[in-house]
Length: 99
Image (cartoon, rainbow, N blue to C red):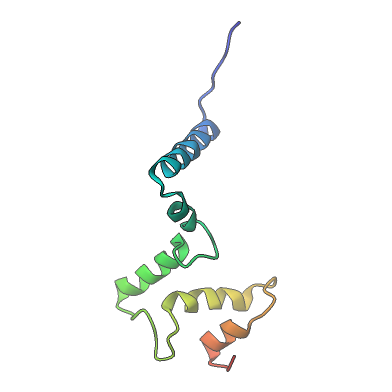
C-alpha cells in the first residue's frame, strides 16, 4: 500500500487552523481568539485596526457625541451597502440625524 501525501496551500491552511484551534483549546483562550474574527465583537481585528489607524494619525478615539472612530468607518460602509436593512445608526454617526 502506497500513500502519496501532497503538501500544498490547502494542506498548510488546514494544518494551521488545526494548530491554532488546538492551542486555543489547550490554553483556555479559545473565546478570546474567536472574538478576533467575530464580526459582532468590538474586539475583532477590523475594529482594532480602525482604532489603531486613528491613533496613528492622532485622531481621538471618540468625538463629542461619544462616537468611536471605527464607527465612522463602518457607518460609511453601511451607507453604500445595498443589503443593509437600516441606516439609522450610520445616519446618526455621519450626518448627526437623531436616532
